[in-house]
Amino acid sequence: MPGVAIAEQGKRYADQLVKVWQTQGEELWLLVHVEIQAQKEDNFPKRMFTYNFRIFDRFDQPATSLAILCDPNREWRPSNYSYNYPNTRLNFEFGSVKLLDYENRFQELENSDNPFATVVMAHLKTQQTRSSPEQRKIWKFSLIRRLYDLGLEEQDIRNLYRFIDWVMILPKALENQFWKEFKQFEQERTMRYITTSERIGYERGKQEGEQKGQQKGQQRLILRLLQRRVGELSPELQERIQSLSLNQLENLGEALLDFTATEDLLNWLQTNQSA
Image (tube, rainbow, N blue to C red; front, side, top):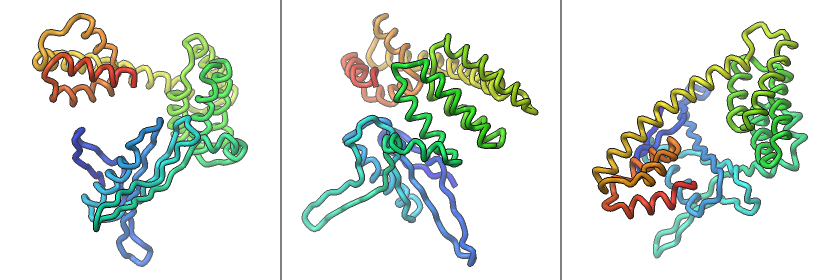
């Protein structure tokens, strides 16, 4: 049952809302709101409250809110949003999980057969190997091999493989070396289906090609809209816009509706281009 909330930034879609029934036959709503946050943000607690309230306002049912904090700041641990006015008081509390806490519990993750344990391990090792691509390659191989050792189904392996491959990015030379080594590993395991690495490599290449085509189309559209709003753009500005990611282009497409001069565009780029 998909949910949608309308915000100033545009539509916000819920990933998954599930309605279940109790064994006695009674209807039970179980709405779970999860936010994955990769960096410290002062307004994050307010956003947690806002999204929780939007779910309540849309369905007239309470929701459980959980924040998964992937940022590198050990001290930042938001857990509530509150305000206190005359005759009006609010204290909204939400649960949170700090992935950094699992650095000291890594053996616990290794001993777990929970698929999310592999996700956390990949995240932690990605952060720890930022300046050591060789070590990242070793851990990437180890984590993906672990999926096979756990005896997971092919589809589960492919899904988790996609995540690890997306997070643990390697330099091109090491990536090519990794593919060769992992293909050999799968052959030694005598898999009964086409090697997962080949299938996912093909899918990833296809998706990247589709994304590049979508990104170029978005660039052309944004440039046309900007020229209508603020006038002709310099080659330098056009180049800066063409360097934006697809997500940044989408955000710019919403923001430019309020632009009235080139200065507005420059201010937006200064704030968002490095984000």
